[in-house]
Image (cartoon, rainbow, N blue to C red; front, side, top):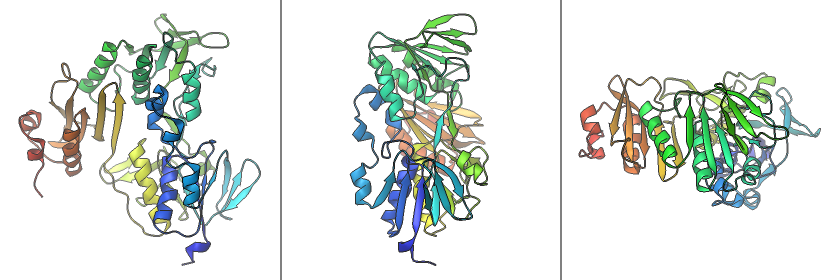
Amino acid sequence: MSDTATQTFVIVGAGQAGAETALELRKLGFAGRVVLVGEEPHPPYKRPPLSKGFLAGSVTQEQLYVQPLAGLEKQNIEFRANARVTRIDRAAKTLHFADGGTLAYDKLALTTGGRPRLLSMANADQPNVFPVRTINDIVAMRAHSVAGKHAVIIGGGFIGLEAAAVAVKLGLKVTILEGLPRVLARVTSPEVSAFFERIHREAGVDVRTGVQIAALEGDGAVTHVTLGDGSRIDADFVVAGIGLVPNTELAQAAGLDVDNGIIVDECARTSDPDIFAAGDCTNHPSEFLGRRVRLESVQNAMEQGRNAARNMLGKNEPYHMVPWFWSDQYDCKLQMVGISTGYEQVVLRGDPTTQRSFAAFYLKDGKIIAADAVSKPQEFLFAKKLVAMRAAVDPARLADEAVAMKDLVPAG
């Protein structure tokens, strides 16, 4: 094996997965050249606070940074901002950039993340229609977030609900439009969806589910959103939170295997042994789920990024993680572990119709496959163990708040 001190490892994509990959390489003692390439002008930053603290103004731009420029320099990580890779020449192991430059690599990691799914209708490109993905998106949105203005949020997923909670606190009038019959329909149970609809309505949000958007109206800026039933909603600005498209084009053009993400093995390796991938852009095998999955999760991005770094150094360590997620809305913290898809029974611990803290457990074949905890950090701590074990727990005891959670965790 060649001396790593003379090698160049390049990471394309400067989000949290890319940052963790670069930092882990240094942590593991890699002495070669590490180049982190990002299309944005900013150093790597955390995206979850964008729709929460950063939009609210309680988190500064500098507080978003995973590592400021000085920190990257201290780690001897070369950061290339405003740089777009246009082509990977796998035979020559060289990257080609939009500005005409090239960069040779010994190992390459693709942490290209994803981009917001755009509304496919006229006026979706107006200057007051905002995705929620980058610092620049939120900076532009904040200029419109003035008390008394009306924000129309399209999409009742995490991004839309979080943005709505912040907008209400800023004094805006807020309408959420969701095409499915309930908010968070793709990720949770009707009981949990109903809870979040309730707390948003109690905060003054106009939540409309099962609606179709017919048109975005306005000349030079969107002023009204027209629904399929003909109703028109005033809009000072529109937030589009309708999902993410993985950035796989670079990998696909290079001939790497792609299918709803860049295909990687259990060691984050692509179909090219010298190219790895991590984060939102990857489709990886999950031992926990027993199938392949593409996860849009900060935890996955960070942990898979670190795993990619270890395996770029030849450690061949398989990546095993039980997926988990979180969302902050008003005074409620939702923490989720596992994937509830295909559950046969939901067991509630607490009453979501009257309380603002409870837990929901999802069972299949009598075993706990996932759990949602709302403002129940202790329940979540034990839920992670129960889900990881796929524990079989008596539903009656699980629902009984008089039974301590620790007593539900099987021994051994």
